[in-house]
Length: 215
Image 1 (tube, rainbow, N blue to C red):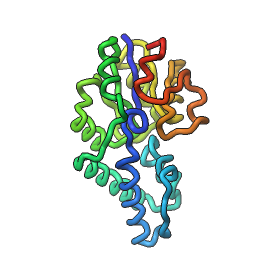
Image 2: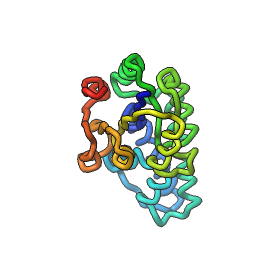
Image 3: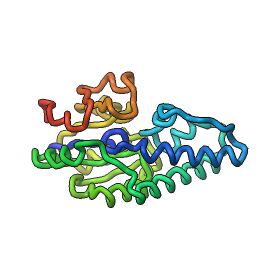
Image 4: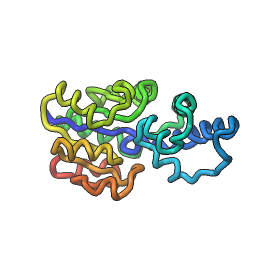
């Protein structure tokens, strides 16, 4: 059996559209409660957190913030993004659905693996009917926000076969390196060249995956 494991945010979903305003809502809460100074953020200052778990994000952004406030802010972001999704603001990258359909036609079984929360994943499955294209879904919240390469152990025990990893951050390419798998780095996402340097292939749009000879 042939499997492709897809990251979601920055790979299939143009998540900055809903993450940036959600992040700013949480930051406003911090300012209003005396935990931070007012600041205008550039997009790349916010997008660098996409692809990280909530725990990693807050430990990177404001490590000294009390744990209960980190959880509060994480909830603010999560609830805001769900609101924006319901309002129709979420957007997949151009060509995403067509690419998933073609990969299904080619015989690939697709698996969703994201450093996201369960409610976020379920909302996207509902809105974009992702269950039409993916056979299984995994999110880090279900695994106590453990690293993706740890979650992959569960995936490979359940699904026997060959795997290709597709994603835009180091945490995606790391899976492939640890398990000697093919990897495809998404240069259009939120990682940088250094994070993707060990990917076997680099693509500049999701539909370019169909041009790779191993596909």
